[in-house]
Image 1 (cartoon, helix red, strand yellow):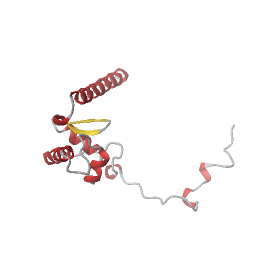
Image 2 (cartoon, rainbow, N blue to C red):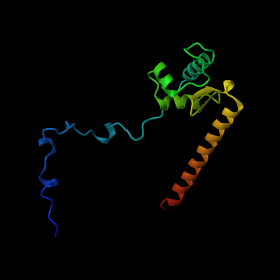
Image 3 (tube, rainbow, N blue to C red):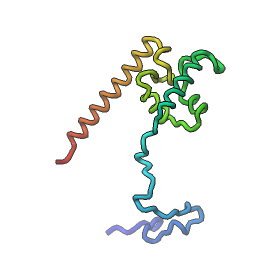
Image 4 (cartoon, rainbow, N blue to C red):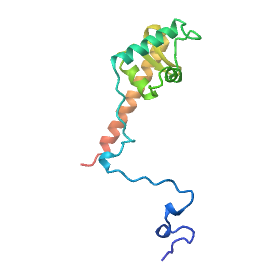
Length: 144
């Protein structure tokens, strides 16, 4: 029969007795706890799409420090502090093809080269295939 380690015996240790213990907060009932693992999808309004399209067009036109066809997510977060990366992706997705995204950031489709558009479409199709494959794997493991 094994004996508990003399260094750590969970039955005889109280975390709140330790001088560096984190502050204990009361546990909320499940219906009142935030669902941090499944946060709701960002709400995208038509005005958000227009705002992003106008920003990207102004960047293209050289209104900002330098003229750029591509604007990074970081630059967009700096310009619109209420927008998270997830919200920016959701806005681009809701743009009905007006905005493409890639390694360089976000760009108006109308300002992108044919190669940039092909690359964005190929990436989206690749992601769709991976998601479809994952869904099929999950269904195969489903318990009946």
